[in-house]
Length: 492
Image (cartoon, rainbow, N blue to C red; front, top):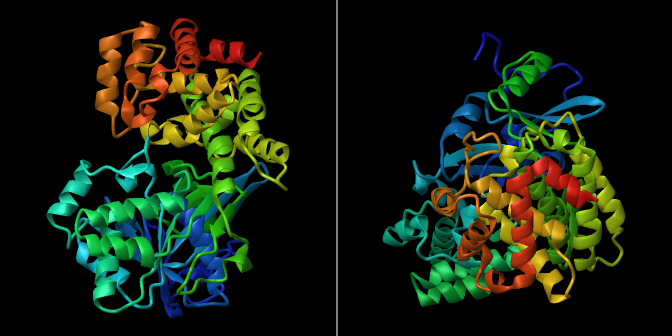
């Protein structure tokens, strides 16, 4: 940290006039939401909507929680939990300071403090962005994984949990015991049918503790599904320096994002909610069609871009999209293989596709392919495999979707096209690397071995020739020709 003053309540008035700041006094608001997983996405998305809302309804501030590390709390606490959102586009950068997060707890350090916050009668919503892997579930089935290390640790000490399912269920148990109405759970992660999925995971976890508690979670706790959409790259040191120069103040951890933002919320809040609609969220009776559209079109394309782009030597999404073959591949995958699986009455899927292509081209974001490539074993089932299963059921071709799967396989071998190591960040990274080393560069052996990973592919796909053959062909091309040439072939 340099000699510049730090962003804080005291220095808010020192900001340039061009920087938007809270329209309310952050010291005067009341917490109504606990959010598990205070990372870049939450701070660039939900916290911004709540920042807009607090100006006319001060009872919905956020108490945040990190489920892993203390770095976010330690960065933001000295600046009164204020931080900057930088919106970047081809037109430049717009800055705003957000004040909606009023405290951050660190679950592994002090689970009791977090559980006390979640048990407060004033908290009516607990929302989550803990990534797919944070739900301790089997991505292939959507069920809780009782053998997950975090679940086993929580079951051994259920009154001091640190996993998302454990924290939710223990806080709900405490509220029930104290005769406090349960909060509504609002997952904001990329899971198919995230509301029903998270409700099921919670009930399954509760059933491992107590049948009566499980019935309570199943029948008396509301879960509101959501679809969230905003591209938020990891903040770099260069970003932090540029933002500090524009602010005239230090901000230890700003976030960078794009102009586009969308939040679709299932209107299921029996104990009350903010007027989300007043700040641009869409309240709907059924969020699932929106989730499917976003998972398959945006996230499926993003993952395909990430693996092919990284292997082809493109550091960012916009660099990959500047390759006309890659852009054509992504566009035709969405048009010919993804969009036919979606039933979105009243939604112009072609316009949504075109908007995604434009967003992927945004050179100001510098969204790293390596970042998107993380945790692929958790992401593939919902981003690509659901679409593939629907296409197979319809007897329709899956060539470009299969290429996305094959590119993941090639990536998780852990060695790039120049023979250099890839830092594969994935819960199954060690297992996947070992599979790659044993199978070598034989595409049939490699595809067969990876398709045997039931955590990702379930039991149905590995024996279906309509899936196995195009994946194996694509993998053979990636191994023989490389990602750039293969993308060009598949784009034709």
